[in-house]
Image (cartoon, rainbow, N blue to C red):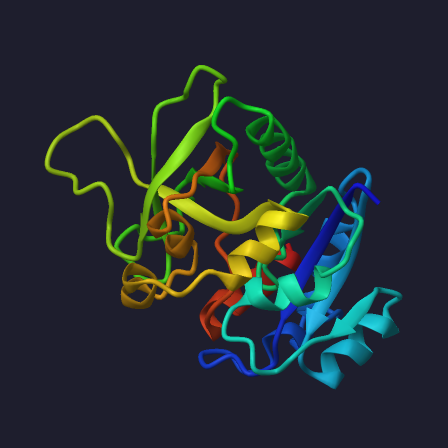
Length: 247
């Protein structure tokens, strides 16, 4: 196993309870995510959940699932538990509410992390960003914005900051906001190290766990990929996803 994709999925979503099992398209949401991830070349896919209903659904469509501690406060902590002891070279965290994330984007994330690990300044983790899709609002706090560096000598960009506020502030011309796609690539070592890092003030303020990595002084490499539909956080998001699937 060289790449392990772990999809964290919990039932107790505040804004959309039971989200992974919503099935107005004819299959549960988690199956859409799983099937997209399974098309990534050379990857093994695993769902990490805290709910037996989700585990049964995944096993029911032929997927692989593992039960994890219900006390985890973040998806990355759930992924770290599921991936502990894995022989995988790279572990990818694909959010369970990103059913329209293209396999090619996940492959770009893997390739970026491979390059970033071998660069002059190795990355602790790697992630993805895109231009804002037409139906996504940069002023919406549910859409996370990323600010990136210019490419370095290896052609790699680094994340400078992530925020729920609109960044950069549009006082002049020059840089459009970038949408953060909440998928991450780690090595087995950095994933477990991330799970052990203490939470940080900016992470708590913005409720964005990736800020913990930056606040502890580590690098997050970032690749820009074509825009995709935003993740599903609300009933309205899910209704739009169902409509797109029925076209």
